[in-house]
Image 1 (cartoon, rainbow, N blue to C red):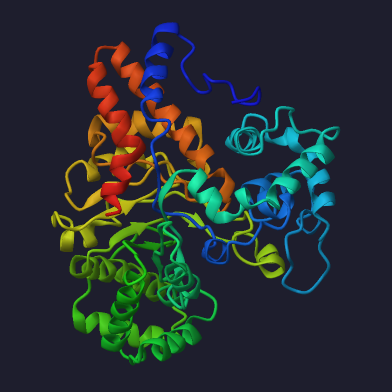
Image 2 (spheres, rainbow, N blue to C red; image 1 turned 45 degrees about the vertical axis):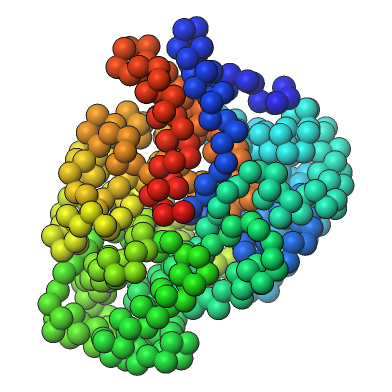
Length: 469
């Protein structure tokens, strides 16, 4: 590491505990990376073309970056974020980079700053902090390296020591990039994950047209409840043929339902006909989580639930720039009541794996840890999204371990669109976990040999087991 990243980053200040953390970290820092849930583009690995320029690699796709800059008055157009209405946006990577460098101070104290400094230092060998004065030199250095074979996507995948990575693809995706990866003979393990929001959520844009398309792709009658469920089974099997081990569901709430077959069919008919009753639309989403859990019992796919985000909070920004542009805001989320219908149906099944995430940290100790601490089917996903940070990871361990333990959690996943930040995110998680374990050792709550074993589990084994990779 260069001066940008201190060797004792995130380790405790107290000398004895820091020494224990160092020893634990030394045993896990070079373990392979399991990246079981993320949003990197499979075409990168399929085409293996050079990344275009530093701005389009590091800034334009990363909502952590442009949401912060936008909050301080920087227009998304000026950061190169494409518009939907055809209005102009900045295409000059160097101009975007200079604007970013001019405002880099805004990231002080944030996890984004840690990730970026790690990328600058460890990946690109940069020793000087980014500033207005160093912007052009940094840009030129990174741009030059990106044109070399060692910085193409597959070479970076191997350099990062990624053992397996899962992309997240919509139910209507033809998975052609995954087919190209498979047929190329390259040995990197890139699998897909089934994300059916566009054909499960009645509020998703184009929902009815999406159902028609789903029927065309599967040969199932998606105008009937039975045919609709069969279409999901067909697509899940197709995704499994490309290595999928999980499904993923980004619902506004964690609400589930377990209606009778007749009631579910009647509800589906009203939804298919275009029901505008919000209660019915919400109930349909809830029912489909339970249906997906039942399907997982049959086909073995791990079910991930990512609830509690008010997606696209600004309608004007959604209209101008589209989805996933930094305007997704956490909401208060209930789990005890919301998950009960699903848990009543399948929660005691030891062969089922349901991984639940939250953006509502107040639910960790009160709801999620007690639920995961008793239901065999339930596991806790790591600190997610806004809480994918040193403080967020510490809070997660502090509020869940005493009730759910370590083994009802699933290790770490980076959940990123920014490919170069994957090693940085895993390194931060490993450092935070080692610091937490070191504290337990110093308080005589763990033996050192147990802490070393746990460090390995948290960094590598738990994710591999939980996601069946």
